[in-house]
Length: 245
Image (tube, rainbow, N blue to C red):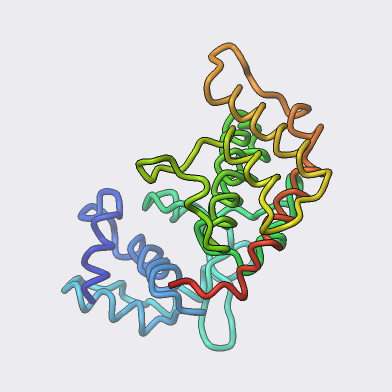
């Protein structure tokens, strides 16, 4: 188990841990690192054996005892799983980044269906910033998302040379927006101009104005228009039918 050998370096004070304490970490390894739906006593025993460690004397008893009411584990038909709080505690201990749920408070993530992973990743980070009250970060990521989508739209139709300078470098958003709005390759709606202008205005303020601190109301004033603009560009790109080279 080479992965297990690497995983134990993430366990704080690994050499000082008791066999009982290591059960929890090995269970986490099996469920989260190996992506198993459940883990069993015999699988945890194999973790001890593969590392040449003295195992806990009675692993089945330990798991069963700690699966009682409000225990660390939940017993299933084919094994055990962590309860949520225990899993989060172990994740923090091994410096695991906990995936947060994506809310609908800023924009519905379904708008990005069929979009590539990097577009979805930017959108998720933008939503998390909004939900956490990091409004400057939200606007900067909003600006990046819009800029990326406009570039992808030109690439989709094979006219990306229209948004590059003589050195082949893409224009800034201030030049991308009018070129997107006026391109004969698609019919940009009337409403999208205002939305794109707002994204650029507030994104620039958040990124470059040292005395500007974004507020929730700044974003809420145009977040509906943002969704419409992003959705329009994504529908124009038509990711599901884009055959990239």
